[in-house]
Image (cartoon, rainbow, N blue to C red; front, side):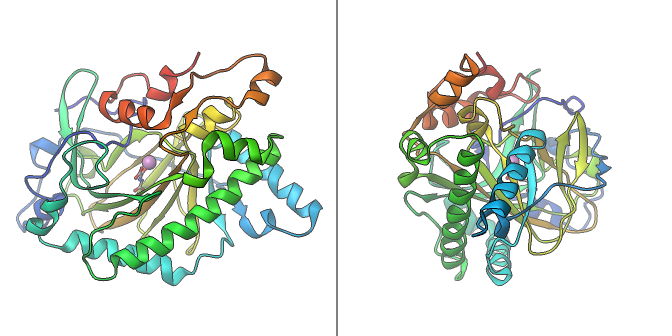
Amino acid sequence: MADAMSENSWSDSLQPLEFEKSVKDVADSSCLKAVPSKFNFTNESSAFTADALPVVDFSALSSGDPHQRSKAIDHLATTCQEWGFFILVNHGIPESLMNATLTAVKEFFYLPDSVKKQFEAKSVLDPIQCGNLKVTTASNQSFTLWRDYLKLCVHPQFHCPHQPYLLREAVMDYSERIRKLCRKLMEAICDAVELDQQYMDQVLEMDSTSQIFVGNYYPPCPQPDQAIGIPPHTDTGLFTFLINNGVVGLQIQHDGKWFDVHYPPNSILVNVDDHLEIFTNGRCKSLNHRAVVNKERERVSVAILNGPSFEAVVGPAAPLVEKDGRAMYNSMKYKDFLELKLTKSRLGDKSFLEKQRT
Ligand code: OGA
Ligand code: NI
């Protein structure tokens, strides 16, 4: 049995996985009363309910009224610094498209294991991967996550299975709209920290940004305190956008405490990732978060991780380093960062981002 959950980060990972059987199939077996031992991870998943979580109104960010826009930008920057997380409203993505994406992803997970198995990952950077993940702790114990996943590289090249029938169209349309939103948020962050947008375009190679689409399926779990969906981790890119089927399960860490995330329908949960923290020389904070499971309801979520170009070498922005007197992080090619984080991280170790601090 693995240790009690550590507060340290583990990377959401493409680590070598096993796909003997989907977690969904394990959970579907009618007599399952206890979590099978390979999933066993004792954890304290209780969390606080925040009085109010930060909300960002996207329409104010793109307002034609300069005063309103500048107020909205200040609010976004403060939120990214203090929370690393916000609920995005008035974003303009149709609710029908978000629902279609969640439905198609759920249908994918309902396909027989024999079909899904063909997308089993062979290496950490495969453009299409599905299965479940085994996590190793710093003390060299392993356990499997109570979660099936589908991971697709959707930009700069688009990869997606051809079934179920509506998946490709929904993933393509939804990812493209998220890419545009992310671009606008990045422009607003540049304005807030007084960085030239052309500088950002050049350094992050924004014309060939990377985008990874992750579908998560968390079946009902007979003992939610004996298994975990995803242990604490930060995401690797710039901003991650998350939607789900209305079942609570995402928890975020703020001021050392864990909070459940409750959100209004049609909103998108957005978090700051490692490379936004690095690029802003620590002004924005990469959010530590986890996914817990529950006894009653299946949970489906879709996370889109928007990063710089895989080929971009990213470190703290030079004008900010000049202002601050020093670079707080090392620079590295984004693809190398991803690969190293995904293959080397151990649950309970110092996080990969912390290791990049100078
Ligand atoms: C992720 C993630 C949380 C969730 O996929 O990186 O943090 O609520 N997902 O599914
Ligand atoms: Ni995550």
